[in-house]
Image (cartoon, rainbow, N blue to C red):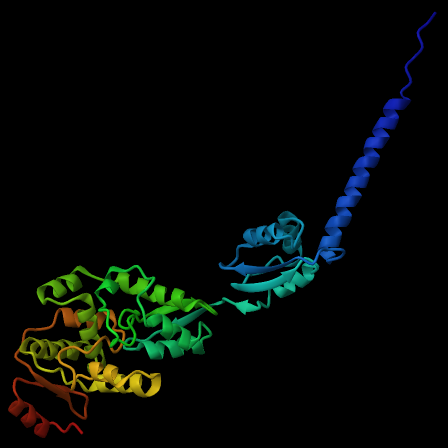
Length: 347
């Protein structure tokens, strides 16, 4: 008898079943992805997305997916590429929920709840900590009071030059003098400690062998050098006059005389009258009252002024003044000083 042929029906049914399963699965995943894109039937999970860099689409997608705001970083990235091909991410903090549609997320990413957008901020040479704090607040970087609070202590900062700052209650702002003046790209709404650290890094980068040699040769600390430079910075009108002014102050220090610098009065007055520091602090900064250098720097000097101090000329000058034409005159003794003032009107 001939053999019966096997029926192909079970195989066909199996294939049909597989197709149906794949189709159902595909429809399921399509529905899930579409619901995710539209923000339908999603959870109430919340997440604050923090973008710290510019233009890093892939990392943004990963953060959103890992925190269940979107179902997949691949889906999100592809959707953004199709709908917002030229999108630029802005540094900041964004409060989100999983129930937001992709369109709503994209709109949110254009309006951070807390912006960390980079802002170019210029800190001029000779600016003091109080003035820097005001500049930072005006540019939305951080609160002035918060920045000044950070400047009161060296705690938490790991720099060798800060180890030269004396442990004294008479020092108003212990970071003063080391907040290097330059143009920075600061992020808005930053932690004031982070801002201070960027400025301290800039100073640390500019410490030279000549600066360290000057300190060794003159039995001074880096803090002493920067304090002296800050007074010269405020007295001088440029590097040319700064060298001779530094020479006057170095000669006075070596003789044990008071510096008697008028610019220290204004800094001391502001500390006492505007920022609530004591009369003792005032006296410690006002060089007509305190011996030698003031308690600390009165501004933040640029490299040119620090260099002028480090390379000051050896002279016998003990006095100086600027006339009405802003020309400086230097004298070896008081009689010569008075004679020069009579010759060149100064007030």
